[in-house]
Image (tube, rainbow, N blue to C red):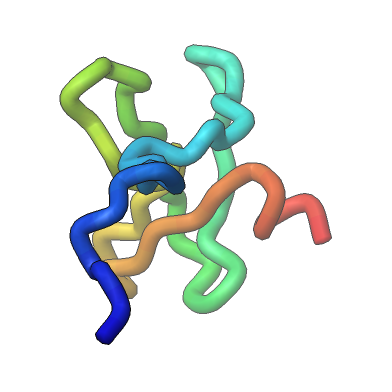
Length: 65
């Protein structure tokens, strides 16, 4: 049986998202409503952009595609 308690390969809980400038503004690609830029605090684990209308998060990498 395999040992599932091996922590040799640790999990990264906070991805290194590219964070937008403080005054950056973007519209949601789904509904075209303005999105909220989240603060890059040490306790925040989500993506930088939040659409209140769609309830969806986006990263800069996803929006630049």
